[in-house]
Image (spheres, rainbow, N blue to C red):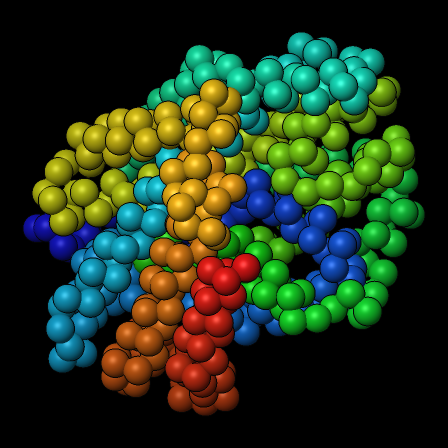
Length: 458
């Protein structure tokens, strides 16, 4: 019935679950943002702060989301409602889960557009378009893609066709099998690129940039950056991980699995830095962050290096695996909600989801080109220079995501009885549980509130 997962909707194995969850967490932000943030904010000094944030804030929340999902055996809304009823609370807490679904839907609508860029650049790299390319030509190539809505719509459609194909097949035959293909592909190509970067690139300068500690760059803003990066990278507050938890067999350890996921997510981000920045420094390019690093700077390196066509193609396979696996996790969260809350069969719901997200994605596509001067909330000072794409990203990542996660922490930390949590988490009432309970009750909600307010102010 609506609101409960059917018996066959479970991960077939702990490995299948881990690969799917890691695939959702690992995304373009691990590759185009984390390494640069590490280098620019104190190297290993930033890394230490990030790890404290990931395990002090991210881990307790991730454990909480998985536990809520497995207790409720539904998607985010259904699980929160079910756990609330079990705890003698109002089932209206399910609205927090609906907020997460809305958040992940918005993220999917523009993240799929970015995923389309990786497909386009894979074709360019494999066809030799980067050969002997100069800085102006590389910039013009990227600008040309941003200004070509038909090309962007085509690749966005390809992303949704693949997403629909996988999600329609269900948990085990769809998203789990995709994870078993995409994640090994990601790790293999990443290792290949790290080895190539060490041999053909300037690994010494890259190691210095990424790992040399510089505590003079560390301040309050550094901590805020680390919290934001950890939060978005892991994928907390987006409804998807509660849904993943609802498919989790009882015998799987939630704390152990959550720890592995965060370690894998951080490892991928670091390896990405060791793959990318040796090439950047070897060819005298300026380190950067965001799309400029992957779609303007790196093509210059691939265009100059021996075997650049081959290794450029390999690198963009890595990006496709990272981006597409995140799209699948987002899509699963929304499709599950349609199935459980509205009674729409998965095979139909995924088409509704993809069509709606594809249509909203048109706004992002147009704001990258012809509508780049359109600022929908320009009358608000904080949004004066934000395009439609920027506005959607800020609204989802800086407001909805943080609000939903803070409310989830308050609900699970304060309103769910202690014994229910112990039973489902499968841990003793000892040091680990005491630490987890202290963090999710007294530390995480106020920290997220500060990050939310600081984001709105800045």
